[in-house]
Length: 201
Image 1 (cartoon, rainbow, N blue to C red):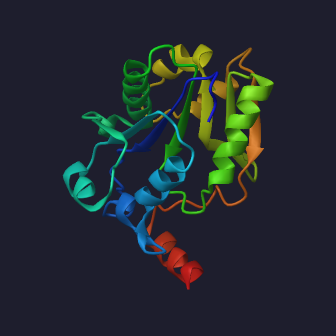
Image 2: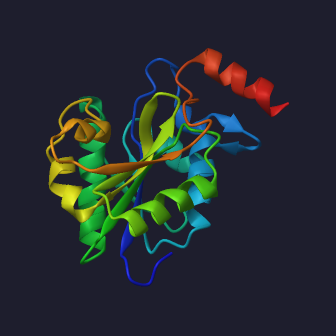
C-alpha cells in the first residue's frame, strides 16, 4: 500500500466462540466463511506481511479456509483472552518484517467489513501520524485498528481479555478514528447468525 511505510496486517481468529457453540470463523455469509471474507478484504490491499492467528478448533478451521499468502501462527493460550492473540500476532509480524512501522489488526466476525474501511484507516494513520487509528461505530471504537510502532510495547503489555481499546484511556495516547457504519455487528450468538441469514436474502 505504501512504499515508504512497512505495514503488517494481523487477523485475530483464535477465540473459542463459546456463546455460539461452534466456530464463528466458519459461519457462512454470501457463500464464504466469515474468516475468508476478512482474509479476502486484506488480500485486495497488497500487504507484504500477513499474519493469521488461530487457536481454538484450529485444525477444523484450517481445513475449511484458504489461508493463501497468510502466515498462520497458533495462540496456544487463546483461552486467556484477546490480549494473548494480539501479542502472538504482533510478535509474528515483527519477526517477519524487519523495521515494521505499523500493524493493522482485524477480527474474523465483522461480516460488513469492506476494503474501503481498511484504506481509510491506513490513510488516516499515515497522514495524521497518531499512535493508532481505530474504527468507530456508534458510541464505540474498536477494530479494525492500526497501530504505529510507538504503540507496540503497550500492545505487548495487555493482559487477559483486554483489547487494544484499553490504550485509548492511557494518558498521552493520541489516536484518530474512522467511521465503520456496520462495524458494531459481529457474530457472537445463534441469533446473530439468523439475523445475518435474513440480511443475506
